[in-house]
Image (cartoon, rainbow, N blue to C red; front, side, top):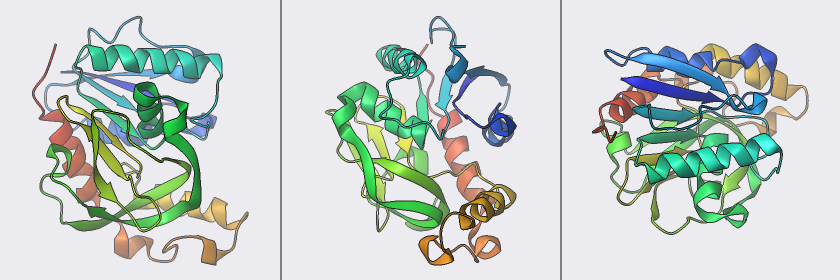
Length: 231
C-alpha cells in the first residue's frame, strides 16, 4: 500500500508530519511518501497512491497563496480518481473548499483549543469501533460552516457542528479534530497557547493525561487503511 502524506505544516520543527507518519506506519505492507505542499512539492498526479492524507496547518484555509491553489487542484484530481482520502483540520477545511468553494469555510465563532468532546451523529466507516462520544485534541480558528453537495456530517462538538464529514459515495473523509496528536504534542501546544490566552479560553487544558486516548487515532487510521482500494 502506497500512502501519500501531504504535509502542510508551517513551523519547521513540525515538517514531515511525524505524528501522522507514526500512525501510518502501522498499516501492513505500506510505504510512506511525505511531500511538502507549501514548497510546491506535490506529485504530478494522485494516480500512483493507494491512500492520501492531508495534514493540518497554521495556514488559513481561506488563503489564496499559489501553493494552496495547487493543493486544491490536487485534491480535486484525487477525488475524481476515487482515491481513499483523509483531510485533518486544515486538510478537512481545504477538502471542503475544493469540493464546494471558499464560502463553505469561515472563521469559527468559537475557536477550539484543547481537548474537545466529539459526538458521533451518524454511522461512518471511519469511526467504527469508537464510542458515541470521545475526546480528541482540537486546535483551529477556522471551520467548515456548510457541506458541499454530496457530503454528509457524522460528528460534531458543542462549538463546531461539522467535526467530521464523509462523501456519500466515495471513501473521502474530513475531520476537524486531531486524532494523531499525542499527549506530549497536546501539552506542548497548550503550553504555547497559554502564553497568548487565559486558561479559561482553553478546553480541558489540565486534563490531558485523563482525556488522551491513543485508541482514538489508532482506530480511525486503521479503519481508513482498511477501506477498499480504488486504483
